[in-house]
Amino acid sequence: MSILKVARMGHPVLRRRTPPLDPADIGSPAVQQLIDDLFETMNEYAGIGLAAPQVHQSLRLFVAGVDDPDGGLPPVVMINPEIEPLGLAEEEDWEGCLSIPDIRGRVPRAVEIRVRCLDRHGSPQRLTASGFAARVIQHEADHLDGVLFLDRMSAFDSLTFLTEYDRYWHKDEQSGA
Image (tube, rainbow, N blue to C red; front, side, top):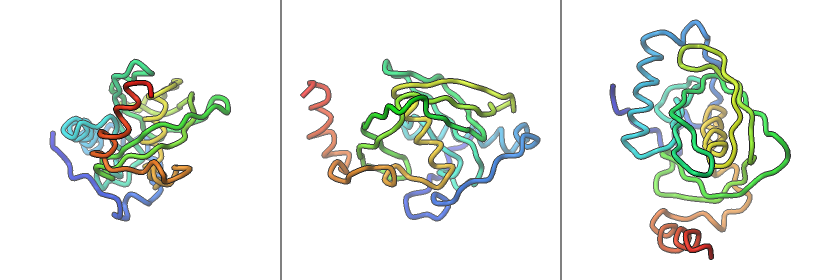
């Protein structure tokens, strides 16, 4: 396995819509290696999700794993995901991105979603996700369409560097203020 170079905001690969991955290619050594490398890279940088375009690969797949009391998600591979919001409820919350290091912003997302995708073996999967897990899935799926979290922000007054987020915003959320 390898730690891959993460594309940063401004690189054209992050703005391209990825084509569907041919199910016949999923079992190939190259795709399986990429999946392993995505997990290793995500973990190396303490991420909770990483999409193929973020490592310069225009393939319609991402990995994610969230250990969170507000909607955890075991390590998962999603290939050719199709996401459907369940209801109209949205919630705005903080997001960051390995391709936009040290920046945070508040992004509105569907609270609950249904996902259809293929797993790393090419088997069809259907799942529902809510809370933080739903947010992570939507964020990573956006990368497959060339969309960054900044594009989803409804206002930029919350856009902040990580150090200022930790200093001024994160402590308020922990105290309930």
